Amino acid sequence: MSGFARGKRRKFTSYVLTYAGLVSLFLVFVFPLLWIVGISLKTREQIFTNPPVFFWIPTFENYVHVLTQSDFLASFGNSLVVTTASVTLSLLIGIPASYTFARFHFPGRGVAMITLLIMRMLPPVAILLPLFVLFKAVGLSNTRISVIIAYTTFSLPLIVWVMKDYFANLPKELEEAAYIDGASRMLAFRRIVLPLARPGIVTAAILSLLLAWNDFIFAAILTNNATRTSPVLLASYAGGETGTNWGAITASGVLVVIPVIIFSLIVQKHLVQGLSSGTVK
Amino acid sequence: MASVQMTDVRKSFGAVDVIHGIDLMIEDGAFVALVGPSGCGKSTLLRMIAGLEETSGGEIAIGNRVVNDLTPRERNIAMVFQNYALYPHMTVAENMGFNLKLAKKPQAEIDARVSEAARMLGLTPLLDRRPSQLSGGQRQRVAMGRAVVRKPQVFLFDEPLSNLDAKLRVQMRSEIKGLHQKVRTTSIYVTHDQIEAMTLADHIVVMHGGRIEQQGHPMELYRRPANLFVAGFIGTPAMNFVDAVGGSDDRGPLAKLPGGEAIRVDGVRLDEGRPVTLGFRPEHLATHGAGARLKGPARFVEPTGALTHVTFDVGGHNIVAVIDGEHQVATGQAFEVSVAPELVHVFDRQSGMRLNAA
Image (cartoon, rainbow over all chains, first blue to last red):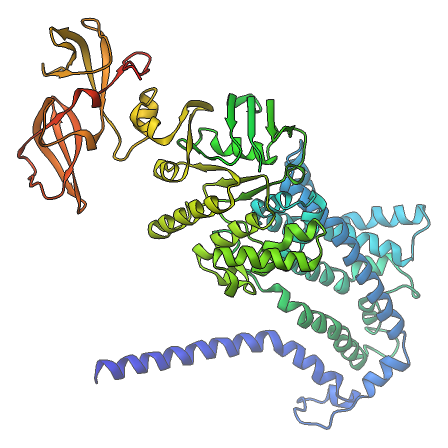
């Protein structure tokens, strides 16, 4: 066999192995989602048929049920409100805070950063009960505000740690060039630093969004039927007098994932790295 | 345009003093190079003029205005950074017009001034590009354009060519010189490259350890370095130094090398036995001609084309001579040059200060 043919064959084998790996990974990650979508489109009988049916005429009765006969829309609205508010609040506080940590030297800077990290290391339950007592004392228990504050507390350390490095890695000369061009510190931050930090901000926003959107434990303790969020409602479908309502759980699950997917699709183009290439050599 | 005057300017970072009382007058329209090795304080001094570093003491005046407490914006200066510092999210035109936009100039005026600067620097076809789409030389030119467009009182350059390759550096050097000849704005140029300083500036300030060692016209510094540091810093290849002791005979002063050779010197009175350091520039050592002879075996021969650098051994000292490239020398071969008395620099060995009269 000629060297050329051998090389070609080796290349083919490596292609096959690469794609086999990629397909396996895809299945591992996507299979659960596909399975959930599948169940959400089956009738109660089809769900419990053994062996499972792989070909069936899809039904939307589970979607109709959760959208009309349960509190799904109310809890979905609560989720949207608390997530939007906590992400906005976290970014509004976290971005200036992380810029300060990145650019200013002040006594206690290192200790403050580590303290933030320790806060994040605590299991949520450890601060949940004190928070519950606190919110009750100030009359905020069972309100959406209490969950918003709790989520903000928990996502701030994450944002500060992600964004601090991002700001620290932006060349300082860009800001200095802006000062020379006539910008104040605030203006340089707004016109130069923030646009360049966009990929970092988007990353921080996604992390903070997932934390708030998917949280169960804080919402389960801090809200009531009127203010509960989607994950708490989903949990209520489990158990009960008629057994677990798998159709409702999976249909709600699919509906709850949709906004996250839409948001990720919108912001992913901002995640493109290397925006600052070509400024400084 | 404006003059820049510094009076007893000092800078400390905590307990560390980095600038020790600089007095410097830069004339209106001059091109001044601050030159010195890394850590000599030249960039810090430039950043203090720009307002990016606070002064710990003394006074900086631009024009007749003391600027110590003014922000960079209020000083009306422009700066070209070593790493260009172009805004990556803006086009070339936006980069160049950013300062005019902040000054709230009408868009028509911004466009006119940007295109005038772009024409001057050959950037017109690149105005819509982003910095990442430009080559190193083009980025450098945009950085200069950004400075030119605002018509500042003073241009500050912080090692602007050190990121470019050798060929481009020479080209951009000419462009900077050409630009200054066109606009005649007072310019302060920081570099560690003494060739850049020599070729560009009409006044050079040599700094070392946060102090000015010597300042003057480039050729003045080359011909009459005030001390051993300046002598060794200005000139490529560097000046040769040899320890000697003073003496004289009936024809005048001379210095004796450890090997016994006597080198005749000029413009200085030397007491018998006074320890001195002699300096001679490699390009002043001639294979033909009158003057004291220096001889020894050639250690290295480095041809560069028109010129050849020969390193030879004189009494244990390595001496470099730059000779005509056509002159044949082989490694190990005996090599001999002469040096004219008026080209021998004599320094006090203890203080390092120049002893020859001006």
